[in-house]
Amino acid sequence: MTTATLDTTVTTPRTVERVVAGQATSDGAGVKLTRVLTNPLQRRLDPFLMLDAFGTDNPDDYIAGFPSHPHRGFETVTYMIAGRMRHRDSAGNEGLLTNGGVQWMTAGRGVIHSELPEQEEGSMEGFQLWLNLPAKDKMIPAWYRDIPTGDIPEAHVDGVTVRVIAGESHGVRGAVQREATAPLYLDIHLPAGAGFEQTLPEGHNAFVYVYRGGLTIGGTAVPVQRMAILANTPGTDGVVLASGDAPTRALLIAGRPLNEPIAQYGPFVMNTQAELRQAVEDFQNGRLA
Ligand code: MN
Image 1 (cartoon, rainbow, N blue to C red):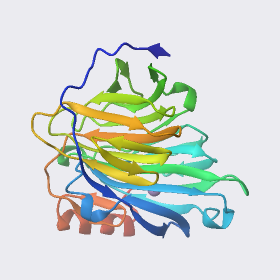
Image 2 (cartoon, protein in one colour):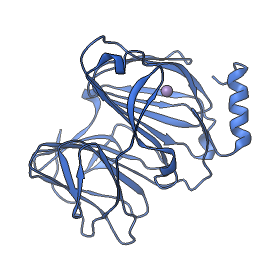
Image 3 (cartoon, rainbow, N blue to C red):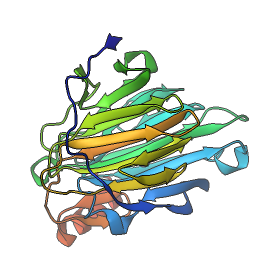
């Protein structure tokens, strides 16, 4: 717990370029979810490849989970708000992801894993973010870390609680740091009628996803279950969030773009079609993980 002072004042905040609703879809063995960051936005929001939001009280929408499937070339960051998810992978890792916990998995050259709910009733809510790896790191060994909720650093600024999953906020360093893309991943809890500011490096791509309440950013209303893509206007130094008349929770995610070619085939994200063919061949021949 850190009570920070506002030594990071934003003087020229970013505006909202676009508000996005996302697409209802299903993945895995029929898990219903909203794909907030879809394929057409991968270039605009480089180094982020995908953001899924899942949230339902109906077990039929989640119970089958995500049975055994492969990944290569990027990282998955799963953040559970409610419910329990059991992870097992080909590197021998096993973990139970529970309320407020994060699982950070580097697929690297390859991993085969399952992500299965461990409950038969109640609500399931959370997010999965895909963070790209630079070309030079796409074939590194797989890596995995479970971060229980108590191990996620928090900043407390003027009544606002900031859970710092990655990067740094108001002097609090997050649970994970990445050199190439310098990802910032914050879960920001604002009471009604509050404000919060966060510095952001110029040129980093950034977006905000509201999952409770509602925000105003630079004069633009961002309702619940919407993503605001923040404009990359030269000369800006951060973002200012203002909650409305309801307590509000939002993810603020930002990172340095890789500016490398993106080639995706389902769960494989590489730089070229030849590398994708290799990934499929490796998977089919049992050489992926
Ligand atoms: Mn997966």
